[in-house]
Image (cartoon, rainbow, N blue to C red):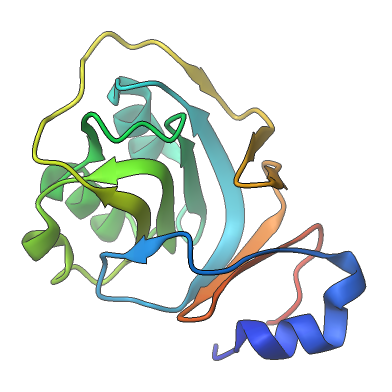
Length: 160
């Protein structure tokens, strides 16, 4: 499956939400897409781990970490779980760590930045809820399409 977000915008702009270059790409896959699953946490990645072990293959986990850059919500261990379960990608409104190792994994990973400090392990947060950050709504079951130009979110599947 190949696509370009620019083409998706040209053909469907009236029904898309669009984000440009706010995220940095950390995984080996720079182009990915799939249905959205969501987690909302703050400097705590227990629910991130749970979601990565339970959401269906081909899905994209969207993590709203409140935009915090004080610690990482994803490192090499959790990213390997996502890769082994054939998730399409992970999008984090927050930070990753182990960036060198993440760059070798065959999965898409977007985040605001990196930080070597690990997160808390308290288990606080919410799963499978609508999110709002970076000016767009992220609803479980909607579709996200990511490439080097940015990302687009659609209520429906745009490509096969």
